[in-house]
Image (cartoon, rainbow, N blue to C red; front, side, top):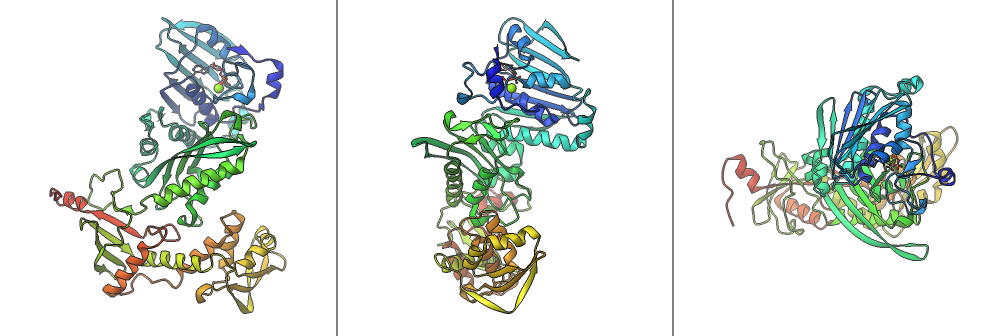
Length: 550
Ligand code: ADP
Ligand code: MG
């Protein structure tokens, strides 16, 4: 442990470290992970201002180290003062000191010797004594912001502050599944991951059984050029299937070299990997860890380290998108039905051959809305939502019809008028070329009003002028390749077969077969599932029977 020299301190992008309780938790968690802990337990009282305690089984500190650690700019993590080669989460040596400035901090630690050390900082006064404790470190922070009334005032309600804490701890737990992470709140367990190294196990703990079951894990490696040299980029983690979505982007998590980061470019890359599987206004649940050589990353660009600078950032984003898209296109996206029979559902999705819709037998229709089929070796019941299936088929037909060329359009006479927000209206102008390739002829005429003179009309389907909103949103979000997906999904939806249409057996069989021939048969263009699978075992267990063997 050493004090950083003035020059290094000046190069560090320091800022206010402790802005709210979640930041304290984050810094303490990072220290525990840097110490090589296999197990980290976080306990919080109230919103975190009362008490935060982080306990680890890492390498611990000697008495001298512990005494130095609470001083400012002391760290064991920059041996050569070389900021370009940082591989640890911490490196600025200011977290413990900054926390001690605004709270009472008690650090109990042992590096494996016969006795442990306790360092307490209260109102700037440091006391050191010896104490019993096994190897590892416990940091307890109480009365946070007691001497910063304005800061205290600015905090949200305790429940909200705890939510932020929980979100941060969940991020580390998901992105570092090899560490057993526990979070307790007011004496009750919020979650505990097993530290098995499996992100699916971590997701089961942090989320629930549904997310764990309805997701796929991936591990991909590609080469990316950084300054003319090829470096290897590894993408590991978990993607929930599009049957599970959230209204916000909070559950799209990314780590760079083990550090959870808030980087919108990477988040969007993951969402692009889902392509049209995701409903326009919904976001996936995903946790991806990206690993690349330390010299391709500069962690020292943001005061709270929530962002890092990447050399070849675009290439890394592309690698992430591709890894996600690959994993999702090979995954079996059928939702395995959780029939309301209170069954102990298996965690793994039912194992099925990819061509399963090729040799299914239609056995009937239910309520003019669902096609029932026997699949596999007849040991699986498929329920196909005929409306969703038809949307998927239409969508892929439309997509291939407009793939390489401009979308045919139809003139509106008289033109339609849409009222958009001023920035959206400005975007109509900025994206004029893209919109015209999509089949729109639209121009703003002041005050957020937009005149639409022509709309897309592929395969004779005439789009609603209102669909300009979605297409525009797609373009502004940078949706690949050019905002067509949102539009096509809309178009595919309207004249599709509706629930409630009676189908002949032949028509039902044709529908299922064509669904099976789609690129992504198991979700409608809005991301809802098209097929539920119920295997015989589900039924057998529901009826207290033993499943037939063979
Ligand atoms: P930084 O993490 O940037 O080095 P901190 O103020 O967070 O700065 O910690 C200072 C030093 O205290 C660290 O460099 C590390 O040597 C030591 N330390 C802090 N927390 C722990 C811990 N949980 N286990 C072992 N050592 C720790
Ligand atoms: Mg630290």
